[in-house]
Length: 114
Image (tube, rainbow, N blue to C red; front, side, top):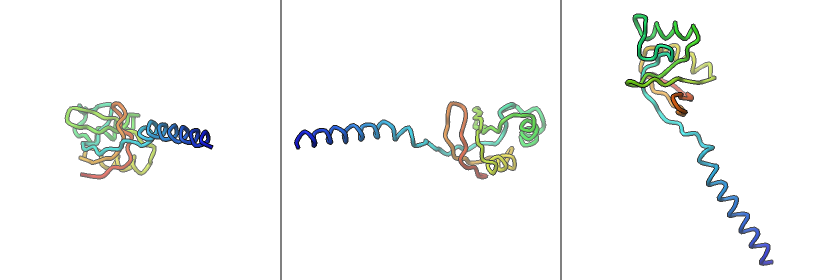
């Protein structure tokens, strides 16, 4: 009987240890970022007269939306059509968005005008 409890104890310790290692990686680290909606092609240097106009033109030609924060350009990724429509409407404007940063790319969860 004591041997059975010992095995159960080892099993529980192993499961708890595995959970401690896996759970932090499973939970996405979503943060809030504030900046101007632009495009990844031009970044901080727009060729046309305004950020919004240039962003619309560049995105039509295949560029991705970007968040311009001071001297940094973060490419924005989302498959959500509603968020893409919001980014289009908010081009050239300051926004606050929530998402997970992976390298220089933010996986966008939500966006709103600042």
